[in-house]
Length: 375
Image 1 (tube, rainbow, N blue to C red):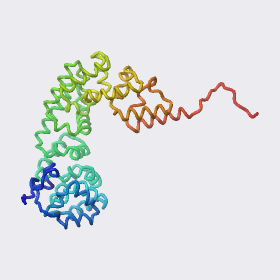
Image 2: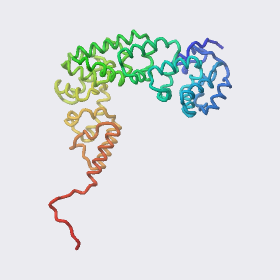
Image 3: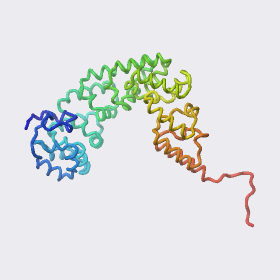
Image 4: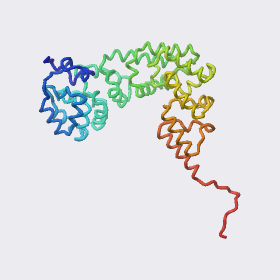
């Protein structure tokens, strides 16, 4: 059996579970399960069968720090159920040396307001916290850089949790992308006083924008400019698309715009208005748009209604069908009424539906009708 030295905090290989035992890097392998690890996990009420099924290789490591890791988490304020949940979802944590884990704790606490919030982050993003110790210098440098931009600490924490790759890489790479975003913002007429707020919002809504190539942003903005969008409209799209503009490319946008214009039978100017009212249309592939338009039309909704309220295209076909059925049950005819009632989150829709129900159940008061007296 091949034996490799464990040099990472927790397994740098993200695909280790899918590899044969003799090919997994950065681990010390054993032919049998480490019974001490199994017993320690049992004592912590961790679902061993789940661990065996999803990441059984962890149980074969000759060195583990299960009790010590659990103790550090407990010291941070984690409950017993939280610890068992964390270790069931991310059992690699037991391979983390306690000293390395303490170093991570100190690093995260430099931007996290308190340990309670940090435990909440670890519960949701354990892989982000139990990352390789070889990335600590990059993490520190990136934290210092984003703090120098005067970004809110909560934004920095969210970036570290949801897009840990951006903090594990060299700070120079993030600097290039941030400078590209700032330059685009200025060139599109963004006000310098609002720069920080704009950047915080964009990074918060789409942390992975940092991992995109800067050239993609420039190419997409040039493409949209050629399609007739003004400078102010481009700034609107860059903000509303939450950074998705960096995930698009001219070819995909060209196909989507061509399909949308043909399906809706509108002019280029009208299509730009539709995109500005619902930037997500620019993001969806034509196959998804085709399915949603077909679903709406089959319910008796006209294309003119869709053009008037294009945000309905953000809804999946399942949601469209469900909401239309609910509205019909309440007596609302989507074929003649506004489609705005279809829009929004589940909470928004339930609020609109509740108002319709009240209107349906409330008796209509006629101020000139004679009052009924006793016979």
